[in-house]
Length: 180
Image (cartoon, rainbow, N blue to C red):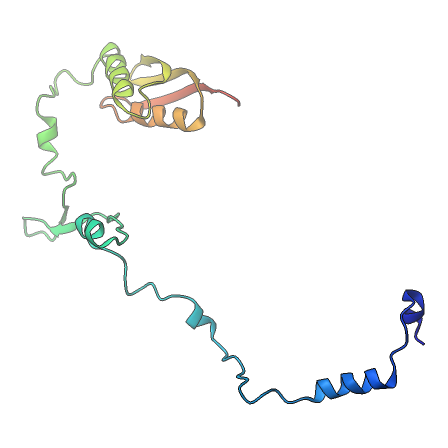
């Protein structure tokens, strides 16, 4: 009797049990037994390069396919012959003039009071920042945001919105985030 059998108080197998176990291990699998085919790793991973989903939002809605809007700007040849490219639907030096209408270059940048009002309006009109309690201070075109916000995302959104106001040189974000 082995030491393991003595420790566990297992009975020693009989010769008949040993022969039975040996016969079972020598059995040939039945005729209808098929070994599984080996599958390569490439076959398990889908090839997603062929179908990138729908090409338009309408197609995606109609066919129930995913739609990924383009992230790179669409470039088209410029109207001139210098080989330049224009960004389709974007800002280029040529079409930037339409946004400069009404800006008096002699007057220059807006006053600090005008910037304060513009930043407050921008914060109130943006959906991410409209409910925030933020104090806006402007000195020489530099905006300082003070107050309390609940989340870091709120502070980042307020800073981004204030930075997009025309005439703002820089944004100093001094908001206190609740819980930090």
